[in-house]
Length: 292
Image 1 (tube, rainbow, N blue to C red):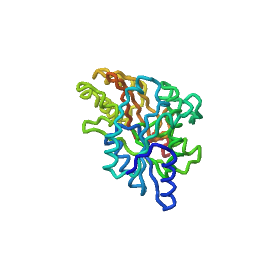
Image 2 (image 1 turned 180 degrees about the horizontal axis):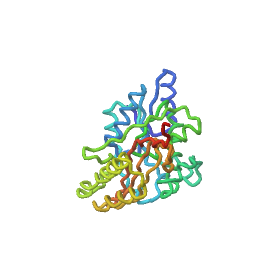
Image 3 (image 1 turned 180 degrees about the vertical axis):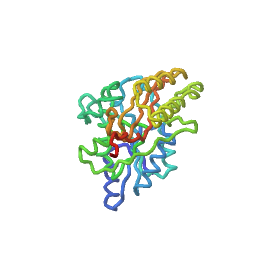
Image 4 (image 1 turned 90 degrees about the vertical axis):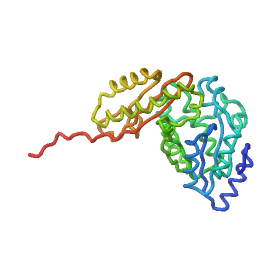
């Protein structure tokens, strides 16, 4: 396995693989890898001959300096895990290489609509940072396929739209959320939870499962259902941030034609922001037509 920090040697290696007719898969990460990341790597291996993983904590997508500073950085451990998975290249660019003139003077990619709703409305500029860095990494790695987790549901939607809008010849493979035994969605931030907080954290996933069961049972008073979900989180000591119930395909409000919904939730637990989502198949609307 190679660990490469600069663009020129990365491009040289990519060019060689291209000449050899190799299919390349890419998994972008911010490091502090857990089994969710490694599941992405394994899915990438199923789709290509070569797997490239990037580790880069992207400052452009953080809206709080202290959150950026607190993000765990465990490069040596990450490299060891990726080596055990047989990854061919780990790409580890620096912020100075990615943004040589600073972020304020850097060109950016903005995905209209999807970037400014839901989480984007409470975190202005976040998805601009995500789209910009992923676009740059796509241009550097030039993969045939890239794998993204469904845990970051809106991020996946933003990436899909960016790839389609900009005609990037890259297949985006969504990978289902990987969970702990108690249902908590795996995240690099989970290691910052205290013992007590870790015991309470699965309530987020439990609340989403309860809400989805209510919807499958025919409940459509979504505003009230969201309030009930917030109450369940508060009762367990979690502070709700946002819960949305949206069309799974458009992320717009549910309409009569919607066939699938997604519940997107975020909350604070101590100093850690947890996110999760759950998709729900909706029953088709009952027709008023009757046989005469």
